[in-house]
Amino acid sequence: MNIRLLRSWYMERTYWERTALAVWAAVLTVVCVRAFLAPDSRTVYPIFSSSGLFWMTGTDLYSPDRPIEAPTGYRYSPACTLLFVPFALMPDALGGVAWRLFSVGVLLAALAWFARTVLPVPFSAKHFAWLLLLTLPLSLQSVNNGQANIVVIGAMLAAVAAVRVQRWNLACALLAFSFACKLYPITLGMVLVSLYPRHLGWRLALALAVTIALPFALQDFSYVTKQYSDWIKILGREDRSAIALDQMYRDLWFLLHLYGAPVSRSAYKLIQLAGGVIVALACIRGQRKGWSEPKLLTFATACTTAWMMLLGPATESSSFALLAPVIAWSVVERLVSREREWHELLLAASCVFFTVAVIAGGWNATLGLHAFGVHSWASLCYFVYLLVEPRSIRITEPACYYQKKLAV
Image (cartoon, rainbow, N blue to C red; front, side, top):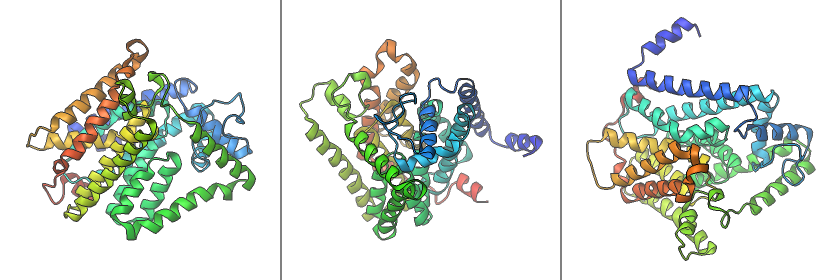
C-alpha cells in the first residue's frame, strides 16, 4: 500500500482509533525488534521452531526422547506442531518476528469480526478502539514471549463469530484448531454444541477426528503414533497441585491451597466439573428464556473463558491472554452503560487484581507477587460477576455504528 494512502487512511480515523493503532503498533514494533535482536531471550518460540524442524526430520518431540540440546518443555499435540513448521523454515530471528506478527494479526482480525457480528452493545468506532486498548495489557506477556495463547483466543473468537453468521463448518474447524493447540478450548465447543446440537454436534466431532488424523497423512504412521503416545504421557505427568506456590497454576486450586481449605484433589475435580455444568446450564437457560443470539453467544464466550482460567486444567500467567478480549468487552460495556449496580464492584475488583498482576509482574521475584494469588482472585471475581448478573449483557440498539461501518 502506498505510504501516502496509508497515512491518509490513518488520519481519517477518530482520535481513539489512531491511539489504539499507534499503541498496538508501538508495542508490536518493540517486541519484534527485541525478538529479532535476541531470538533466544525471554521467549518460548525456539521450543516451537525446533519442534517444527523435528517434525520434518522425524525426530522425537517430547521428553525424555527429545534431543537434549533442544529447548525443552514442549507440550503441544502433534497436530498443533504442523502450525509451527512454516515458521521453523526461517532462522529464529525472522521466524520469531513472523510468528508474533501472525499471532497478533489473527487476534485483531478475529476481535474485529467478533465485535462486528457478536457483541450485543452498540459499539462506535471509539468503543472498538477502547476494546483494542483494554485487550492489550493481558495479551502483552503472551505477545512478548511468543506464546500460542494469542492464536488460540483468536481462533475461539472467530469460531463464535462464525456460529453467529451460521458458518457451521468454519466454526467447527476453528474450534478443532484451538483444541489442537490447547485442550481446554474444547469446553467452548461443548457449550456451543449444547446450544446448537443439530448444527454443531456431528460437524465438531468430524472436525476433531480430521484434526487428530491429519498428522498421519503428513508423516510416517509409526512416528506419529509414538508422538501421540508420548504426548499423552506428558499430559498425564503434568501436575502442579502440590509444588511451590510460585510454580503452581493460577487457578482456584491455588487459592484453596493458599488458605488451607480442606478440599482434596478429587473433590476439586468435582468442583471443576460442577463449574462447567453451571456455565452450560446458565447458557441453556438463557437460550430458553429467549435471549437474543448476540447476548447468548457473548455470555457463553465470556463464561466459558472465565471457567478456563479459574477452573481449567492449566492456567499460567501468560494464559490470561485468553481472558483479555472478554474482560475488555465487559469494561467497555459498563463504560457505555449509564446504569450503575452493585455487581460492578466485582468487575472493578477483577480489574484491580489484573492491573497489579500486569504492572508488578516484572518484579515478582522480589515482591513474591504470585504468592498472594492476584491472578486467581481476579478470575474468581470476574467469574462470579458474570454468573450473578447476566442482565449486564444488554442490547440497546439493533445494530451498532461500528457494525454498520464495517458492513459498508
